[in-house]
Image (cartoon, rainbow, N blue to C red; front, top):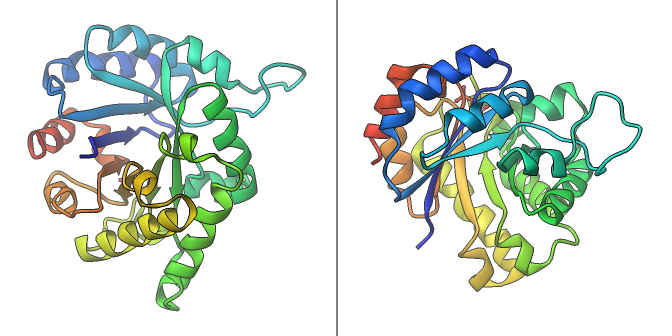
Length: 250
Ligand code: PGA
């Protein structure tokens, strides 16, 4: 059985004081050990949030890092730095970073390897544009993101990676993919992983859906056999919606 994950992606929201306030009110909600709850927070919030979630089973996640451990890379933060602050997950390949920061699949592959060396779980996002979806090329596109993203990653390491299928047309649009589409592509991703690593490893890798996940649709996704959780943007930012979201799955 794969343990479910609900990962909140706060994106560029929440000042440190706002982040601590939200953690304080969410604290009591997150007490169930059946689900891994993760908050992927802006870099500036990592230290205060690490403190604010102490004693809870919330896991700390980051949204970006640089592949070198240290050196003359002005403005960057390394995986060992994140690790020391208690970060357990880092998002890589999010479509916003692919679009605005030229985070290519080749870069994602390097980032995946650097995170695995640092003993941090890569939360690897993949997903197609509306154009690709409408052309019926989703599987070819996502399949390539999987194969190239995992290139050179050992089976032992691959097991630790979490993949998130996030169709770009569903992110922040309110137009969530149906649970059938989510299941179809998440199952396809597992099939590709099976080809790369065999069934035993592929059946251990958790595959999430992301894109306009809300309290009223989360249950549908989680009831699909190949959807192991969700990456949640907008609905992870407000106490009420996060509360409802957790109540609907726990
Ligand atoms: P959304 O974002 O839930 O606001 O659509 C999801 C994401 O970008 O991870």
